[in-house]
Image (tube, rainbow, N blue to C red; front, side, top):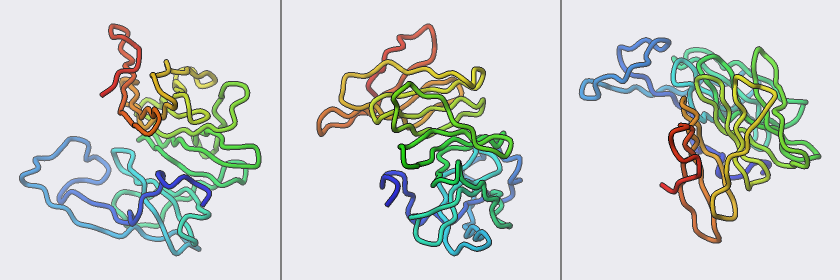
Length: 222
């Protein structure tokens, strides 16, 4: 398969709805004691018979992919969270296999594509894909999450964590390395704190990189 197994969400083809809440304005956490959920299958995209959902923009949309071969080839897709209409297909970056890993409420997505030279991090904004800058010599770069402000986090060459700040879109920052063989990003919050996994031999540990200037910026084990 063209993608690592950890990026697959098996059987995620349904969207859950909070009863009685507007799909486009339900931002505040409801009283869980009075919630109920209904499950809906996300409608297929025209020309596709399968779909996988990976996550939401924490507002009104679900993102994932449409496929006809269980994900061997795929087309990035975005559904309205009400599940009433077929998804909008985002197309591919440079006509290459593309995967979206994160989406914010402004409609900006982050992900990556693969071609004959490697794996390349991209942003999708205003209807088009944009390549994200990386250090010279990088052959593998994945953008894996985006926050509400548009800051994107990813991993380069399976060893270092990289942040692309929304306010400086042509730049990037490599985060301090943790004590281990590989650092891998998994998420970024709205305060730019980054979480990830550090591997050392056959051991894995969760880490956080604090963005608060008053705190030690060194990666801290969770």
